[in-house]
Image 1: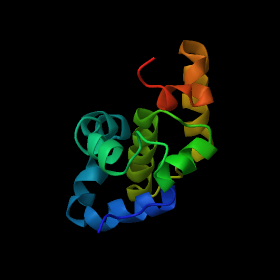
Image 2: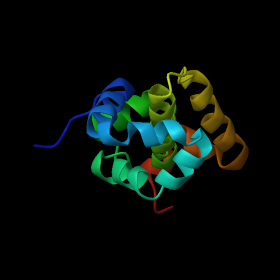
Image 3: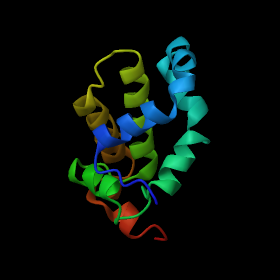
Image 4: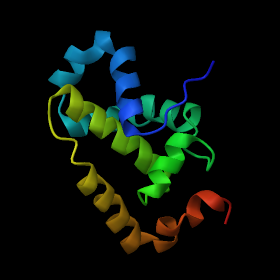
Length: 122
């Protein structure tokens, strides 16, 4: 049975439970190094297995409701929040979201409308 994650809190709880053996390592690595090294491994699994590329998973819809439409941004927010949670830091979700919205507004505003996920081929 596939795990159904409804929001970021569910995702973080799941990651903590499934990474209990790695928590000391995660604490020992700075945030930028952690998120960069995990982007193509754990991040890819999050994007593919948790349905972040679709408009159908509850977790992707939760992100869409926050204004985040690109699966890479979703997985980055999850990984950053996970690292911060393990290190007892505020996840500062509002500023993480603002970072990606501002990035796309400058680089490709259609992403902020959801156009990217709905029409990936265009």
